[in-house]
Image (cartoon, rainbow, N blue to C red; front, side, top):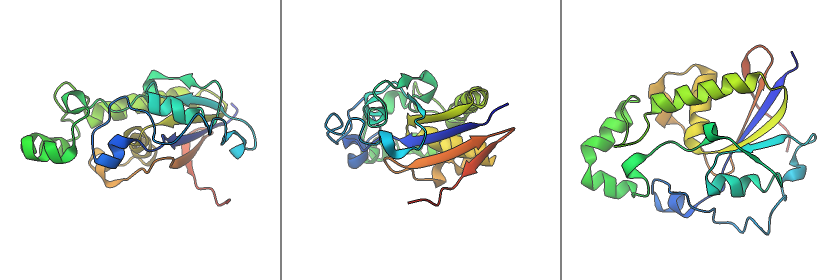
Length: 187
């Protein structure tokens, strides 16, 4: 079977990230319309572009493609009742709940998703992508990218919070029998 190449890109910075808040469906801070397609030539062969359903991923995907495909599996982590809350506010108002969530990957915010659940969702998506040869670019979220790395490296769920994924960060993977991390040395 032909190989699959998958490039994951974190969406561009949002105001929520800058303010230390759990995200809402906010827009990116950059003037993405003025920069539309500005990164399309970054890849030798134009990959097929996928993105999560949120505005910030769709806007970032527009930097790479005029017609990205929205995939529900690339949606952000489900923060439930904590969506839009500041982390500092949560530390003051619900310190035990926040600590339980940070310590236990099976714990979830009220009405939200657990890290374990996110990792299962991402693992299923990666299995599907392994069957889709060609080069794919997926614009998604820091939590989804963390889940991809845990799956790829077969790391314990407890290492989820040991990674920081910055806006517009990139992870390259390839699949020919199994997923492999690709570290690119080009400028």
